[in-house]
Image (tube, rainbow, N blue to C red; front, side):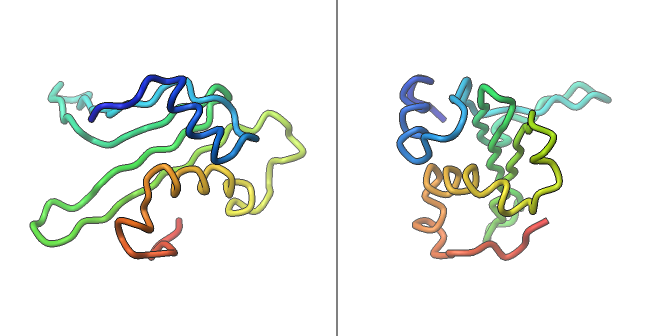
Length: 117
């Protein structure tokens, strides 16, 4: 997968939500098994933010019919008074960016997730 240069990625994110930290990296990642050293490529796409927050998109399911799109949203919180907030409320800005970046509703036809953990 080819990504625009980081400044362009950041411009896209800032155009969606200007209140988020800057994008410092966007890439397709691979997994290296710590036991046998094998490498699994094309494991997903991640966006890393200057403040330590990140968005990770992964496809799971290897069957020929259907797959699950997994979206992982992590936010670094420096201000301890913000810890303990409702997670959906706290992560809403990052979720908003993730859904618009991925065009998930457009591609899946779904406006809400089937599972939230």
